[in-house]
Image 1 (cartoon, rainbow, N blue to C red):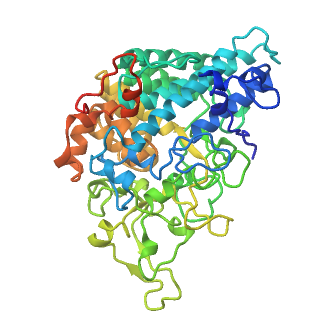
Image 2: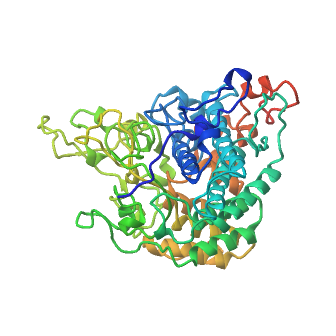
Image 3: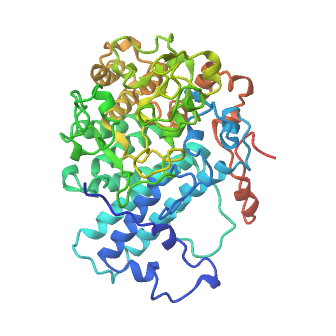
Length: 541
């Protein structure tokens, strides 16, 4: 499979002269002045944007990675403390988000801020140098194409910042002078800039997804994200139009028949979406709109620290006598995220009996001892008791994150989930369309969009009377659990407090409205002495 050859360079290029001691005349190393001079140089830089972006959940770095959060659970903190999951693991960086005890000094509060501004600054660098008159472009369209990709990534960066922190400084140029006088830009203004960037990207990115390398952005990825950002801005008619353009493009459709690498193995079409090597169009997956390239043992692919969703969603079954680590059980999980019983419990009735998203191929509920050396239990069922669930040792597990490394040259104890990641897929586009229609009072249109997703799943169709924010939030769990960032969804729908308090017993007694936003990192406030930089409400010290 052809891949984009990711290079960890964009973050290095972004370190332009902030002070005199960094001013050098580089001739034998990569720098903006000697790289952004030709189409090839911009290809290198934009490739770095893809690499930086795919490191969004990177925990501990790794060879060639341009960003790392320096902690084990950056993805998990955006899922936990909501209506979706709590933790069965004692990692201190995660527990403070599980029990709402994080502060402006918490490491991930700062690392996500740094990720967003790092990606934005890299995009700004490309945009600035692309305007130099002496760039040697191979084709007249190269300049606007690279600008379209950079502007998509800049909007993607601010998506994180706005969801998490609200009003944030909007920076759209390379800051060469050291500054301590930033001010917070109103959220609506930042969203307006994001919309402008994504409209530009949609107008200038390639249209044909079969004419680009796997993982490369297209017009449709920009429109999918634009639909979400329009929803964030309360521009529901525009959100509806953007989603409809993707759905009606003719390039994508929901997968309704089995496909890909394991059609001869037990499973169903929903489980096929998440099997290794099934994420790209080259594997006949016509549902994927944008896929981050993280494939195992491929140049430009993933490494053991890039994506720990497997370790997040798979329980510590291996810590029970009679079990041993196995690829078929998801590898070495850590139960960093355990679905809450109200939706994933065996008796929750959250899924209809016919809904394949609840099949054993998609949520593993039955566990069998698999260690042949323990003959008394081998092959027998292990009861999933409340005690084992609470300890994180055995609970229902979302199999879309199953991925092992045993026999693959990796460390079975610490290997990551190195398969390609569907970032945007058409099922979510339908649910964004439903949200836009619901917000305009078109509940029948919203039901029609939701039913497209439910029919594929084998669930019964709903009526206009069923359409509420709660139902849409539920349906997004059924379809997108673990794929979406749950905090973002609930924040956009305006029900983060309501749902978290209702369904999460660890959150309910600690809830305060300050948790609607994360605090601004204290180090940012402390260093910005040249202008007032207020903390988010409730987080003032």
